[in-house]
Amino acid sequence: MPVVARNPWSDAFGLSADAVKTVAMKSLFDQLEALCEGSVAVNTDAKIIWINRKYAERLGLPDERAALGRDVEEVIPNSRMREVVETGQPIVLDIMDMAGEHVVVTRIPLQSESGELIGAVGFVLYDRIDGLKPLLAKVTQLQARLSAAERELSDSRRAKYSLASFLGTSAPCLEIKRQARRAAQLEATVLLAGETGTGKELLAHAIHNASPRALNNFVSVNTAAIPENLLEAELFGAAPGAYTGADRKGRDGKFKLADGGTMFLDEIGDMPLALQAKLLRVLQEQEIEPLGSNRLTRINVRMIAATSVDLAARVAESRFRSDLYYRLNVLQLALPPLRARLDDLPLLTERLLEDISIRIGQPLEIDPDAVAQLAQYHWPGNVRELRNVLERAVLMNETQRLKAEHIATVLPRSTPVAVASNGPGIRFDALRPLAQATAEAERIAITAALEATNGNKVAAAHILGISRAALYQKLEMLALSRPKRV
Image (cartoon, rainbow, N blue to C red; front, side, top):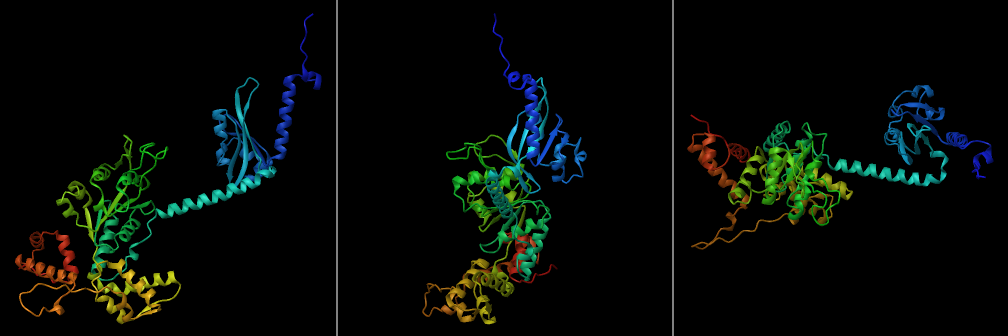
């Protein structure tokens, strides 16, 4: 006689296996629904077909019916229920943000008796799992730190200065600010030329802030401060495994970060020749090619470059590509040195002393005779050197009010150099600082050129070997009268 297999479900409960499974599932669902802080079910279109009252109240709905038939994301913005019904895979444990509060949720697909996917159900478990509260607190803390870091990173890519930060009311200062306002409204590449310490980076920030791109990133790179072997990856990014030690996921370069905004390249004259061709492609085609990649990426970046060297001279020396120079030199702004705008010295001194006083925690003042002492110096380091001199005067003299004698102790002195002479009695008192002698030589040359051309500034600039814009700038700086044509 054959042995008939006994049904343990029938023996235990007097029910068939399918009936017991149905009872068990209903019991489990009822328990979860009672214990959790919210329950929701969706169909295969991710539309809500059921929600319990507790969840409806938590979501601010008047009642459960207000959610029925709506897309789940419309009611629960960060829900991943659609992912469950599309993949058929459960998300057993997840953390979801609900109006700034992190909750623990579970999401399970629903299947018919034939195994067909018919929807999904989700439960909010947060308040009933006390053991997870320390973990959630840690997650919340880490999330807060991440948000703070993201804000800090975003702020670091914002321009910090406006045109009001470029202090001065002298004629050269007002002219450069006028040119900067004009440049801000254009999309053309800007080349800022000027001695070190004249405020080229500050003006680049100001141009970006006054432009239509002001709400997008401002990314600054000093090409002279980054080693040549790292500069390409820093600017253009790197493909995964592009070089030994490279990130396996690759990395975005500064141009990619500046997409939609402004890229500022300081000391562009120091860029290696090998990279100048890639930079030229960015300017011409608005495309970048990451290191180790053969794929071009489109970007939309406005370029501002700065230099404290004579790029035209470097082109002549074959140290800078002529084609790149012409692409950069679309709109050139020549920043005046401090010695050409000494009328701004009192205002600059006052503002710099305010910054120093905030840093050291005590008020600072300066006598008029001390400002007059500062005006006697030719300032080869410009505003940066002025700040350094004021800081040293404050620290070395331990005073809250700077006087002329305090400035004299820290102000560099011009050292006269003996000049060969066939006769005795060399007059050292006739010697002047080099900048002063250079300015006088320029004054004589420009005056002679204007007189020779009967005031024709285009012809005068040609004779002098400079651009007409440069001639206008020098006329303002040297306060020369301009002969009229007859």
